[in-house]
Length: 101
Image (cartoon, rainbow, N blue to C red; front, side):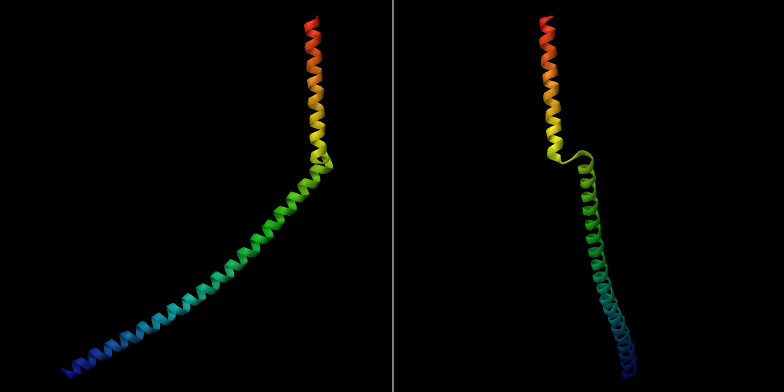
């Protein structure tokens, strides 16, 4: 019976050792995964910053192109208001002439 218990103890100890090794491997893998995650997060942060800078540059370029072609927004608004006023004047004149005829 003692021999049988010794054999079972040996099997149990071997099993415990195997599980300890697997746990240590899993812990090492977890640490490596954590480090990889930190690297990816840093890379994503860098890419995001570069993308935002690129978008801002494109917006600025488009705004400059727009202003070069059409002038400032205030100038464009003034031109639109002047055109609307001219259209109203033409419309009113046409109505007066039509009613007088």
